[in-house]
Length: 231
Ligand SMILES: C[S@@+](CC[C@H](N)C(=O)[O-])C[C@H]1O[C@@H](n2cnc3c(N)ncnc32)[C@H](O)[C@@H]1O
Image (cartoon, rainbow, N blue to C red; front, side, top):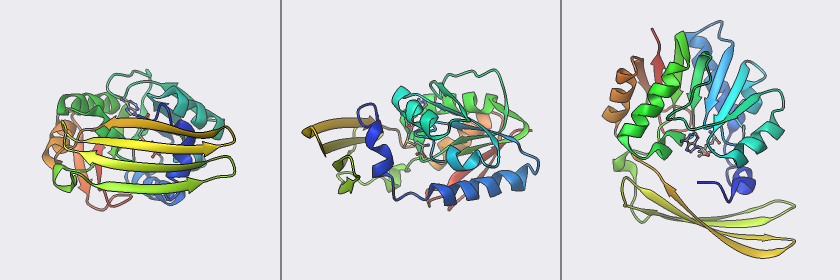
């Protein structure tokens, strides 16, 4: 995952409108739970959604990668962060809304683990609350051999990232980084093992977790969104 590149994550995804997405999330939550107060962001990354959501809600974040959690903690000091796996975590508290955004669910790789993640996250939703999951690409949308390369620059470094998608397992992304900074040029390779899931597999996971699921086709960024209401 981003173990070797957490430091470059915000530069690489600087095109993302986290503030606008957070406004949409706030609307989604408030339309369904007018007095919502608590939010858990699962796979919170560097805390870019929580930075905005914390102005409206009492927020908590959790991510598998300690490097990402460290950056998030520095970014949003008032928020409690945990390190943990979305498939098997227990915070012993429940929230009005639990979020899992920017396709992080894809890192569960298999249907079995995706279902475990939806169940674990669902366990942390209060009765009357919601679980919001922004899915990863479906098998039909996955373009085998898709290639992409971009360069990002800050005062501290310049990083070029090249990406190729492979058809292995349920989809694998190989990412190659060239990083230039005051110490010279270095090269980092990352393999992101992700799982693509079908619409029906997502619906079944929510149903197994006893959540009343609805699907918004556009969602936050065009990838759609699943919203599971807890009776
Ligand atoms: C594409 S990033 C999204 C981060 C953040 N939600 C955002 O919108 O920028 C995927 C995140 O999922 C985290 N992640 C991957 N597998 C995970 C797991 N099993 N449990 C918790 N977090 C995980 C990664 O560490 C990474 O921070």
